[in-house]
Image 1: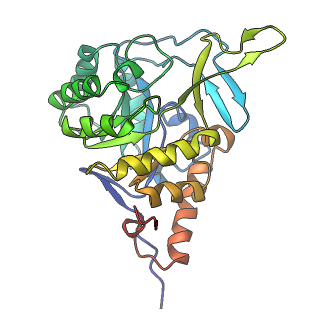
Image 2: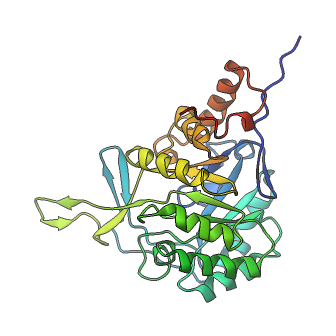
Length: 307
């Protein structure tokens, strides 16, 4: 008798993903950059590079530094702006069969609301991820993500402007991430994603100068996985909305750890720079794990950590 493949599909509110593997914003461009390397239609979904109302040039270089087990970046949310995205990037993405999630960012709540309104009825957008956690900009970003009241205000403003599912991306640079997750849930978020990068620094000892022009940057990659995993586990146990895990996921085993900790889906970020086919290998690895453990669907795995 032919054996049926395990069901990898998951739901994030009203959003259905054929599998739980998403690309993390800022590491996958607008999808087209990886088209020759990855079967884009096999992904659970694509989260595109963060968008602001107007184009942003980003920070001055140097903007990235490799560290032991990680990457330090201070890109500064360089992007083409919402109108150029709709005109030049979205037509390619519309041809794909997977959900396209747009990451948005603003300098103030008014800008978040305007962005949400502009994107609310644009064909080809399945959901919004609201970035309140970038550590590399002077206005907006982590300013909202480190205060639960401000995080809730941004969430309410976006919620009121759009019917699309909204995912709030949380910062790890806080003392109590659970209180912020609960605040955005109460304010109308359909899901939370965590974690964004941890603020870090690197110094050139010969020049006695910071290696990044911005002085500090956001640390990603395997170095932050234990922190991300702990926070996902804490938040998943405290909220009733889906949690999307992110932070140092390089392999299927990494992704499985996040699913066991309570994440309904995962985002793959820095791994795309090391191994452009990491997402494909992670999807296959999860499927193989479910089959090996005789599990019919991924839902039976989510949050099944034994303590």
